[in-house]
Image (tube, rainbow, N blue to C red; front, side):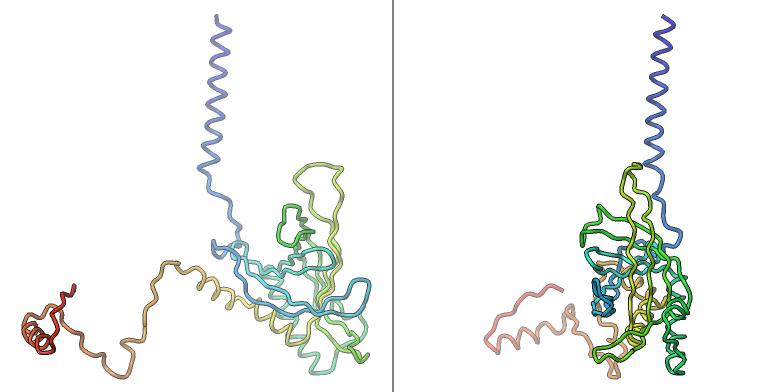
Length: 276
């Protein structure tokens, strides 16, 4: 008898514990990224043309790359296809600031004709950042995506143009990096590695991306996209024009009604009821 009572009590206790756990999970607010500046979806900033090295070749090909800003994590990311993979290259605020400073130094060195022609010295001459990249074999679905934190060297490099002349490019070099462990917990899963990716910019292209990285521009985008979607557009310059506004008709002025009716009768028309 006591045994059955103990079993029943234990069952009730376990059930109560499970219900309490679920209630606690549901009532807990979702964890937010500490760097979040707004709880809105990623915003497309624009595009920038970047040169990549061709597959099995050192020659360059230009690609149009889309640039987005994710306010929930305060990071800008570039999305592009490299070889057979689709990549997202993320830039947090410290790395964006480092990129902007590097572009300014590059322009100064370029104008002073102080650029070195040796890649070994120029590839990371403006510093090195700890980046983040996401990649997948599918262009839009990231169900099989991998995440890694490669180092990104910021500098410049001389490449030959179509006529064979050496031309300086501002550059970033994303090094190889092992992917984070997947959520399967399997030790037999293949170890993925992000590719080594060199990206080359002309001065104007580097300036375009640096402008996209500017905080004032990003916060302006957030303010624009955070406005309520149901806002009704108005003409804000009505009372700011040089000429005073014309007086409005008074629909409820009884003294004007007989004159209006007489005018309508003279014109052969009939009075039409209007709703104020």
